[in-house]
Image (cartoon, rainbow, N blue to C red):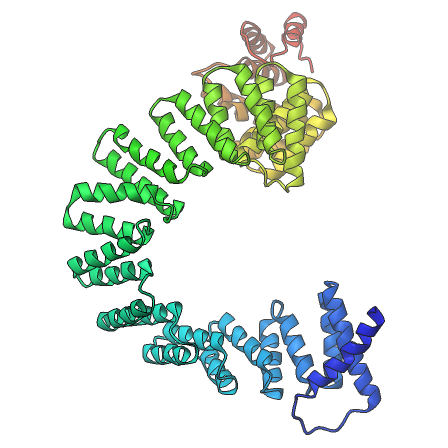
Length: 578
């Protein structure tokens, strides 16, 4: 069957290619065979996603027969996203060689629209419709282009041409109305919509649309009459409900406006995004006027009447309840939201935050487990589980969750988790492996973090200090540390690290300068490690008595990470100890 298909394709192509009217020397049978074979091969290569090779085959076919419309069209088509100017020339040539080919002409119009050449696109449609006068879609598109070009009279004439072809059409008539409104010709717009209402008397939204035109004309009583007609035909028509709300706002009838505002929220005919916009306006107004927020709760409840299966609507109400200090109700609402949509990550995060606030560790762990089951592809809840267990002292269990989060982050190309959470994730993993003495792995996570966040001073400082302590790459340590003091020149921790690295390099004059800077800036909160390093540098620069004083100060202080055994050895031996 495949063989038969390949035999058929050249025959079809020859038929397609014969459309071109050309007065050129006839090709030999051999050249025709080569041309057609190259064309077929190009299509095969294109279908296999070998775009470059497909274009090469087409160009060779074009070199054999450069007056072939099918080859020009295919070349233009394939070059569009690579070299638009060349593509356009080929498409233009294809349309000239085969002026009766609908698809060639249409593709050239599309290319003109892509470049914003509106006049050329209009001209293309005009020519196309002379050959194909009954193409309804093209007539409609041409009218739209006339509107874009500001040629409103031609647009109306073109829409009327389409109506003569297909009869009265709602969308065509409303397009005409839009053109009249662009021209500020509201009377013609009303006449057009009235004719449409005669054809479609039960279409409630047409009456509402007519009301909007009257409202814009300041004919507000006529507008109200239209809106009421619309609701008489369809009591749930969202368009009319919104418009009447606006009408009553303008006329100052607050009670009626409030009635229709509530209907907006209960309507199933109004999009949820629109309800959210109204809700945001209500919240802002309430805050600006310093009215009590409990007054707006009925709007949330009204919205839930129509949006009970919408997790985002329930999330909004839960957020309101949280702000109103009603956490138990908020938790129930969040559980309802998750029941509606178990994939709602934000709902799980809100719920997790609330149960964590309640200090119910059993519920936190259950919520985390449920979230991981519901959205196993998300790194967030593995990350949260890792942090939760790490904080609770369950470091081995924390590690399994953090590694799972890291694997998802890596697989996603670092798109999973926020920047801050990724930094924290890798810092936890670095810390775990540092404490367990797994040098290969803690360097791995330091490197991973620094590659993703090359300007993160905390990671730069940690990496630099550990390299120096391990004496692994002191030159790299200096470069990393120097970046920290360039970014935060008054931070005594970063100054201390830089001084320590310079000391390890034997640059004692510079080391003493920077450690003294660190001593100056740490005065509000003395740090034992800085005292120890100052003592080390003093000893190496020939001041053992002052060094002993600094070591003793450090020994008398409590500080996480301070090696008191080494300090004691320095004090007892009165010697620097690596």
